[in-house]
Image (cartoon, rainbow, N blue to C red; front, top):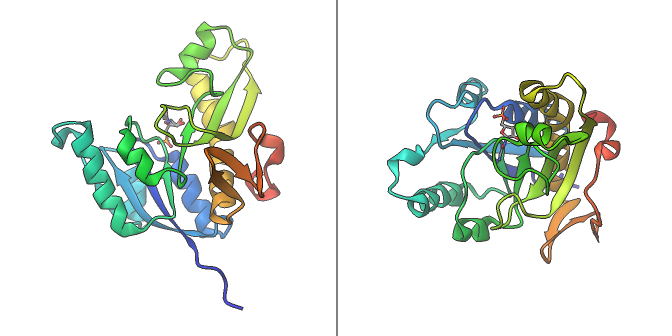
Length: 224
Ligand code: GAR
């Protein structure tokens, strides 16, 4: 029997690329049955591009400042993605609001990670917002991307208790280390294996709609 073909991942970044690095590590050691066909950045100075180039990943830079408006940028992004035939478009710290027509084209095969316990704290400055609101817990969420900003169906959420000495910088670090670097490779692995799907507007896991997001307790041993 031939092994099923590897899923094709396109990873979109704007910043340091720590999620990209975790995804690459999980692809390299076989935990994610996939190949990274492209790393695309809207910023030429994104730190993650250095890593991607050194790792030999195909890189594309589309500076959003070169486009007249959001729709023009999104058209160029779609034109870059289309020939890559990505099975999964992974937004990994991609700091762009996407137009509805772009999202519709890739809906169902596009995931995002957001540094909060959605639906709490959509948008920017999530760590400061959690502190301002006196939240007891904080974390990150992987969700399918729909036209509603940070509003698509949640797949997995990792949370921890906010400590008395946690400031916004410390929370950012904890969210990344304790949650994001674990839940994103896991979610992408599930999707690459066909265990996670977008069905009728909901996240379906192993054939059933998810009544609530999966949690850190659901991580497989290789992703903990
Ligand atoms: C991550 O914390 C991610 O959740 C956040 O940007 C950071 C990217 O870090 N994304 C968003 O805020 C999206 N709204 P990285 O470039 O080191 O992976």
